[in-house]
Image 1 (spheres, rainbow, N blue to C red):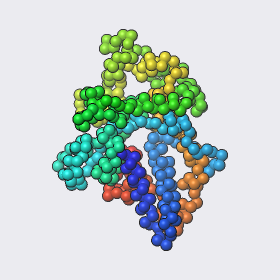
Image 2: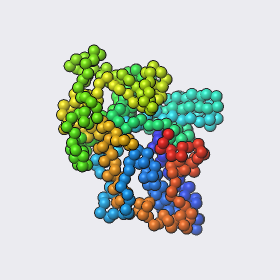
Image 3: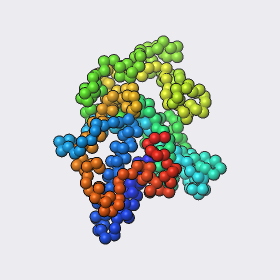
Image 4: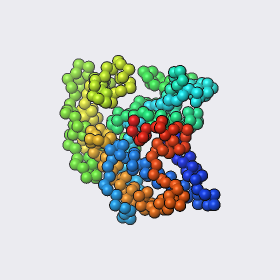
Length: 387
């Protein structure tokens, strides 16, 4: 649903630009000019907002290089770009209650959307499994509030923990007669079959012939890791002496994944029983080290799948990435930039369009949302990639 919303936004933006162009131009000319502007807008947003928000800093741009291959690498498309752990298990929309009729709110409730009315405001929460294959939700929720909601909530850390909606509910095959079964302790009884996106990410790498974690690190000019604790940055890769764990079977013991401490963004410890535990936690400490669990599964660091090792790495300061993923992103986005003859910082046609028709591509994503929905620019963050 989020993808559909963004694609709809840029379709509207294309038509908005067309409407700014003189009617003396042919329909084909207006189409091509608007297409050129929208491509430049998307590039401008990607390189000036999206990448900086994630901490990706590229070498200085020196213009088009015909010797650079701008196509996507198998490693980027298959492993590097799969930052699925950032995704929330639901999309949240807040708006004035008067925006939606009682009939629409009732339809949303019956469709699995959680609706909470509080006086003049209404809060809508759409679980991902309700959003999938349900494009009618975009016009029902309306594009402006939906995009504002996506930008108003911080995403998860880019790490080895993937939301349960993606691992246990994604593309679900529900039990007949139980449409409201969404999440929680009864989840295993809710579905005849599920698709685990974390498992898909691992298998995708194998299907595409991606080398192992250490081989991929070497391919990107990084030294191989010799221990599991070197992968994760933890102090140990051994099981703790903990009476809660079944000795000798720790890797199969569910309590190995228990969180023993939770912390908020300021580093303050959060009580697991408090409301803050579901709203403010940014870091958790499990009963066992990630390195110990990886060691129990793989045995040797040279057997670790590229995707698994990549997401297990500690983040480099100021970024949302470990060493390997940052190297993959940096190389790919530099190639997309340097190998594109029509990149927005090089294309002379964009300056001509601005001078002759008064249409400028240099707009933030927030600007484009405000121009194509009924959400005022002041109701959006200056940079919608940051909360």
